[in-house]
Image 1 (cartoon, one colour):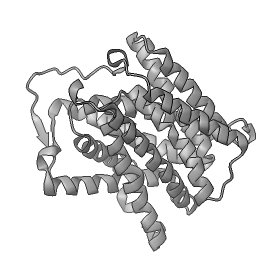
Image 2 (cartoon, helix red, strand yellow):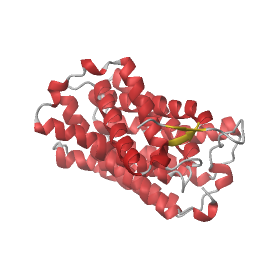
Image 3 (cartoon, one colour):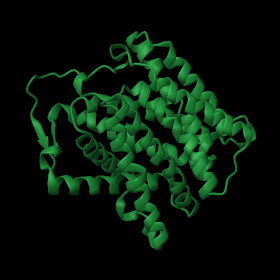
Length: 319
């Protein structure tokens, strides 16, 4: 996006909105997981319903937004499979084995991974405030989820959360790159499409446990996970990445563990101890601090896609 059209304030607001909805999604998803829907199947449901809703809406109103360049299809596939399908599956597996907050703390080492990638893979000299803010958010998340209680951790859950951290960082970087070329809905309809195709190959749709969604409660939860917890926040985050760098958007997204802990208190009946409250204040303070600092765009922006041809051929989805 042209620098003159960037609105950092809007970017931060959109990233915070995405974090809020993802936090709500954790509690909704946990209810479905507790009722027996597996993490991979929930990830499949999340991607497929989001894709179908977005495809139908664009096919009916803005078919032009379904067009992408042929050279970008592998990039969309990478974003969909690694940045969406695998981050969903690893996250759901993590929260099925860990407390929601513990899984999110590990996942939100993602911002640190983005900084390390820019520093060592591309030699960027990043502002010290970014490193400090990431450190504060990690410390805050550690306290919010009581990660010091080692007995509460599960090896498989921790491993899944680590995969979620890596794939979340990949999603943020790939999302920022795609956002320089396409509107959020264009990026996501293709990404969710490839994610849905991936899941259809891994676990065929005809074997989906539809019986688990027979009740009105679970059907509503499934739709909520797809729309409130997936489609809307991912659109918010991809749009946010058009206004602020992934380095800062991912730091704002660390509000999710704090908000998830609060929602778990309200929805799941969990309690908050004094260290959790202190940790939440650390995260909120770090997010506010980041917003007061002007981004060093040349150093923080992820490298753009290199186009092999100057006149790529647009591809249009068949609605």
